[in-house]
Amino acid sequence: MSDLNNTDLHEEPESSVTVIEKQAQRRIFKIIVIGDSNVGKTCLTYRFCSSKFPDKTEATIGVDFREKTVNVEGEQIKLQLWDTAGQERFRKSMVQHYYRNVHAIVFVYDVTKMSSFENMPGWICECDQHNLNRDIPRILVGNKCDEKEKIAVNTNLAQKFADSYNMPLFETSAKDDEKANHVDAIFMTLAHKLKNAKPMMPPYLTVQLGDNAQRRGLERASTEERNDSCSC
Amino acid sequence: MTAVKEISMISKRFGDEFCSEEASKNNNSRQSVKRNKEFNKSEKWQNIEKTLEQDPVDVSSLKQFAISPGGLLDDELRKEIWPKLLDVDVDNIPPKPGIEVLHGHRDYNQVVLDVNRSLKRFPPGMDENIRLGLQDQLVDLIMRVLVNHDELHYYQGYHDICVTFLLVVGEDVAFALVDKLSLNHLRDFMDANMDRTKHILNYLYPIVGKSNPELREFMERSEVGTVFSLSWLITWYGHVLNDLRQIVRFYDFFIACHPLMPIYLAAAIVLHRADEILACECEMCFVHGLLSKIPQDLPFEQLISKAGDLYLQYPPADLAYDAILNFQKTQSYAKARSKNLQKFTRNKKIDKKHWFIFDHDRKNGFLKFTFWTVTTAVVSAAVIAYLRSFEWEW
Ligand SMILES: Nc1nc2c(ncn2[C@@H]2O[C@H](COP(=O)(O)OP(=O)(O)O)[C@@H](O)[C@H]2O)c(=O)[nH]1
Ligand SMILES: [Mg+2]
Image (cartoon, rainbow over all chains, first blue to last red; front, side, top):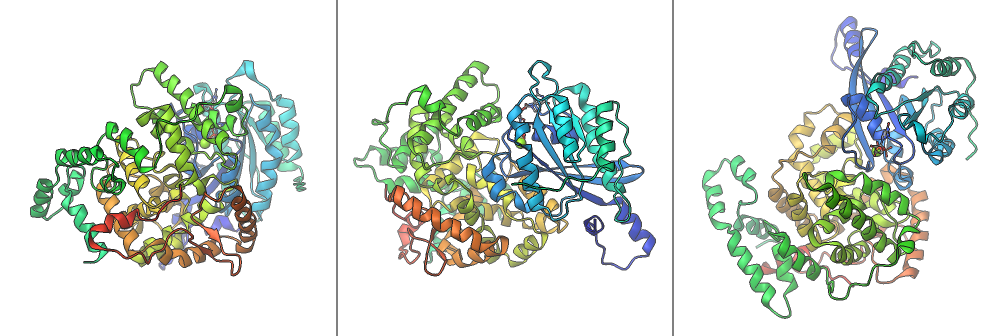
């Protein structure tokens, strides 16, 4: 993952120690968030970056950008979240630019809407087409878990799907204040994975989440072979 | 006198009641005092009313009012003038089709999703029941246009344009106005894909570069692209500005001008913020982060007049070649070309009256303007006419 080292280049001559320190402080990871319109991509990224559920969201036009600096094992890491428009016309011609050099991908579906889950293979395919580097971390997020009585996508089904693509699955809610920590944990999981994903080391997830199903997903993600076939 | 000087003079003659931010930043106090004296809202109002009394009404004077500082001043005037600017007959608006027709359209679900999320576009403090009623009207208004023209495709952001018209002129007249605009100013955004929209965005760098080559070079190096200005263009800034009065002022300007004017305004905004941009780290996300948020306190009247100046100095046809180069740089040209060609031939068949900002020249594969000749002679008093002077085939 050579991109990781390219995020910050210093031209001035400096002692190697300060260079490393500076780089360490300023590592930036670019994460793209994709999925159908209205599944809650904007709310999730807003929840993470601003620590609240937005009272008025609007349709995303093109690409929006949010960022947050987090501390991972003593290192300040900046996570840049690129929140994309769900409407097909945008991603076909506008969003490609943003697929370049991403360090991680977050796929989002709405647990109350089967079609948003059924469209996942299409999104994954499209991503594979844009991304030469298939080894970047990818996670699957089922949002709107707070709508318990409306759940349409069964957890087992989603877990199987995630397993087949070798992605960890998270079911969460951007809206539910009690899940706020959980949304943070999802992005922190990615941050850990990114921080530790050095070229010579196998990616490994270190965050312990409370929910067993989620942890199972994570473990599998790091041990199983990636299903690389793209049929679209 | 050159066209450029003339337009600047016009913007100076109408002063700063609407751009006090400009006056306050202006070091030359003598000049700002002079401007304040010279702009007179009630005088402009009287002139507009006088023009409206004439029969037939002089549309080019109305366009001039819409462009010059303060625009059309008031929503009551807009109700009367916008239809005239767009040659819409408000007494002959076709009736609304039945619910089954409106709700059966392919884009209906997306429209509902977007309208449900459009709360921010309604005046704060509006009664919830009234707002909900307006949101229903907004869905109907959008669907009416779409069912009326099968070749038009809904895009996220179209609802931001429609809500502005709905709030100012009401559902029926809004339908008639948006219907007309959708076949003209907005037509390029409403293809099945966004290729033409992308072409338009490709004008941004050439315009910026002519005025400030260093800034263009910096932005190119940062790889920021043009998507930060996408919502500006396709919503006519409705999506990014909070103040409805500011938005409708822009709408006055855009309705009266060439369809590419929103991209000239984008260039004016970028140029205005040159120092901030150049102070940024030269990296996509920093520059994108800065640019995608439009400060709400920009000197908007000044920027409108700047956009007009840029348009006169660097008319679209002068930039077309550069825009194509920009386009070639950013994507596989051959692929887009074959797609465009197909689309072009198809659309031609559908309706000859629709024009596009870009048409494809089949022979050499270049994009060219089909509706606008820059060589139009510019005579002194007609400068504003120059701004809006291409003749539409309604
Ligand atoms: N109940 C519930 N609603 C949510 C949640 N996240 C988002 N929403 C709502 O879903 C709609 C779409 O959210 P948005 O973030 O704009 O979706 P996007 O199109 O994927 O960016 C909005 O009306 C949100 O209020 C959630 O976790 N629970
Ligand atoms: Mg969104």
